[in-house]
Length: 410
Image (tube, rainbow, N blue to C red; front, side):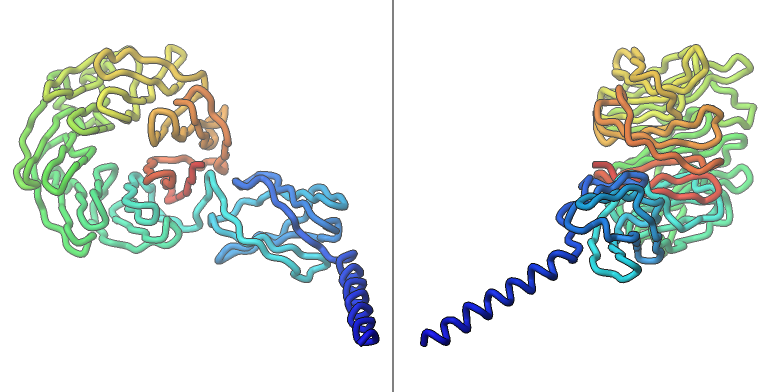
């Protein structure tokens, strides 16, 4: 019995000794920071024998980037996250070209998508974190995997532009202009079939924006500041006609429409050679308009009484402003140049800035209502965004020449 006990003890000691010898040479990853990873971040990998790592593979579903460390130590090694085209990736540890460890990680921030629409992607509508619709040229597209793969829903053969809106995955509206006829088509089955619900010979005008709060209740905005309303998705009544538009010209004088419950706001310009920027507001079923000194662009209501907008300053730079709908006193949020934006709420949003020579756009995030901007992502030269939409913290940014980016907020 004593001999058996001695044999067991010796076996255990020998086993532990062998494990110690293996551990002395083994690469053991104990931590990766930061936890929230963005393209361009420097990953710090900590552990045992990490100085033996020769390189890392950043592997997505369809691409692999082999990246060498920028700094290495005995228990810490650093590597820069490359530009990847998918938010999900595996970080593979390669000591002397043999894989010994793989960790699944996720990106946040801006992620360029490989898919290209070939035409300017002028409008995007988010339905869920996975489902989005995009209008590019004359074609309506749909994705059900968050932007990586796209299905061609319909080629309308006429330019769609910004006049596309989807309420959910099935119900949506698209406007096209055939010569001087403006026609709005409705689908109740996700684009399998479309029926015409509105048609009008506008001459020099067309529908520029569509918004629906339900399958029957919605608004249409024309390029001359006319606002149509429907309560049955069949009869569209003119409820407001901007009194100072230039009906004779073919110019687009109104651009953006934002609706929150019973509050509506739209931005545009008065007509004529001495055109002035204007905001039309509807609150408690009462319409008003206000004239401003410099151009107003994108506008977004964040509740029934507050909004963000882009306006040129006296120095003719685009800046982000915050305003109360009742007073329309504009408050400049920061000194940073901003061309476009999207807010999830009063504090959290993204902004589109540009390089000093306007050579490309730059994406920023804000978590304090535009006072401070961080986590910038630079587009490549001559890459510019055109539209943004989010569902919760996940959004898509569409751009010129069919470019597409995904953005995941913290």
